[in-house]
Image 1: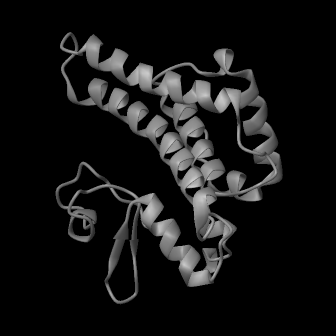
Image 2 (image 1 turned 60 degrees about the vertical axis):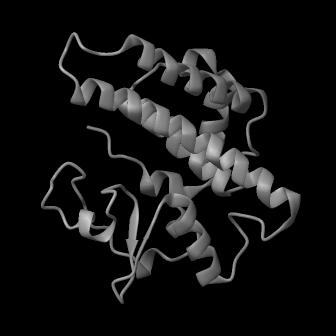
Length: 185
């Protein structure tokens, strides 16, 4: 979404990767085998969403997604980490089901991840980002809520009506949301 918002879509090719395939070149580009990974023309790999966004901002000479300095920068980065934490915890819940045999799931682990998601969603429910501003927080929160809707590690919509309304308003405001969403079956 950041690539789209910063007007760089014409300079980037999206290449699918399989994080579970030991032969996928992703592991050569990012030894952690994690997405996203931005591969530059000279072969340099830049990974992790936050680092990629910082790089793209510098490339475009913009402060659109993250303020350049001051307390506001660190407040924005902190809220972005909170949004990313929702996705991380949801992913860990999905992996618990994907990588463990049925009957061996750790309910304690799942409860721990649900707690992270619940607390983070409560903070955003009480103070959602402005729906008419696209920054690293709104991008991260949109991706987190989209992941929860897609993989369904928890049901969040009934408990967080302000976030449901925020997501609808932000999606209407920012065309990149529709251009970068997971296709529905």
